[in-house]
Amino acid sequence: MKRVRRNRERWQPPAKLVELAAFHCGRCRGTLTPPLSLLTDAAALSRREGTSLVPAGRYWRVPEGQDFAGAFAVALGDLVSVGYHSDARRLSGCCGPSGTGGRNRLCGCGYEVGTERSDCIWPQAVYLDPLQVLAVSPDAEPGAAATGEGG
Image 1 (cartoon, helix red, strand yellow):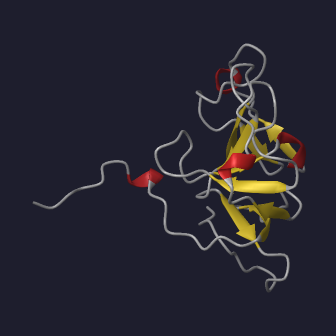
Image 2 (cartoon, rainbow, N blue to C red):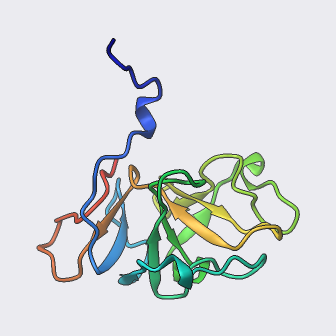
């Protein structure tokens, strides 16, 4: 019997992760972060509420079986020219967005690029959607993507 994937939109292609990557918008190619170093040791993540999940200057690929699996988690302070969604339902939460209302962070061009989860009951992070962003190695040829599909 053939297995059928029902939600094709969430399929994540295998990605080659690079040691140093700057994230760019999948639509306009605008810069979303400065170059960030890959974090491979999950022990370096903060599990404390109200603190940054990922250390500043780093990015972490969320493994399967976790919320936001496949996404690139980055510190809130590492975002550049990234705004909030105008739909207040996407920003609901006690002390910050809970991340349950869908993508709530936008590139300057208006493209939905990720989900901020910064409510007081979670460690804080922005989960950049690999289908919406490009992770580019700083030494790559202009326009070359190292990971992600873009839009």
